[in-house]
Image (cartoon, one colour):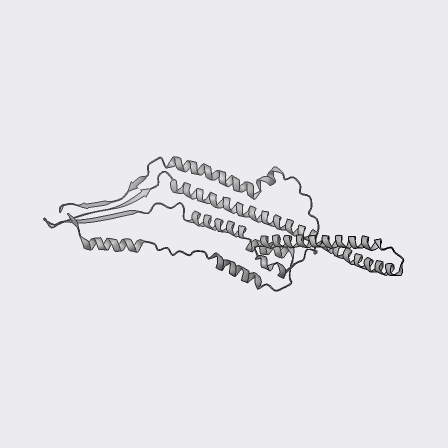
Length: 300
C-alpha cells in the first residue's frame, strides 16, 4: 500500500497552517540603560522632591515592584486560561491499494470528558497562585514604602546635622578672625591660635564626612525610587518639610496579624499545595473519552 501524495500534501499544508510562529525579542541591556540614563538626564536641575512625591515615583519606577506586578499579570493570564477541557482530537487517514485500485479511509473525532474534575481543580490552583502573587505584591509595596521612609528620615537627620556643622564653621571662622586681631594687638598668646585652628580643622573634617554620608544616602534614596544614579545632582530633597520622628509601633493583635498581606500570601500558598495534592490524586483515575469514528476498508 502507498499513501496518496495529493492528500498527504493537503494534510501537510493544514498542519503548517495550524503552527504558531514565535518571534524572539531579546533585551538589549545597553540600549535599556542608555534610555534610562537619558530619561533621568531630562530632569531639570535643582528639582525639588518631597517625601510624598518620592513615594509616588518609587511606586511607579521601582524595579522590584514592577517585577512583582509582572508576576501577578502572568498569574492572572494563567488563571484566565486555566480550567478548560482538552481540545478535541481529529484524525483522518486515506490509503490506496494499487493492485486493486481500492481506497481505504478511516477517521475519528474524540472528546475527553473530565469526569474526575481536573479542570476545576486546575482553575482553583491558578486562582490561588494569583491570590498569593497579589498579596506578595501588596507586601512588597508596604516594605518599599517602609524602606523609603526610613531612608528619607536618615537623609533628613544627616542634612540637619550638616546644617548644624555649617553654622558651627561660620562661628569658628569669626572666632579665628577675632583671635588673629587679638594676637596682633598682643592681648592673646600664640597658643590660642593653635587651639582655634585645631577646632576649625576638626569641624571641616566632620563636615566632609557628613557630606559623603549625605551623598550615599541620596544615592540609596534614588535607587529605591528607581531612577538613574546620574539624577542625584539634579534633585533637591525637601527633607525639612514636616520632618518628625516616627511614632512607636504597638504590638499587632492576632486579628491584625491575620490581615497582614504576608500572612495572607502564605495562607494562599498553603491552600495551593493542598489543591495540588488533590489534583495528583484525581489524576490516578481514568477520564471518559467519547467520540465517533469511521472506517472504510477494502470497499466495505
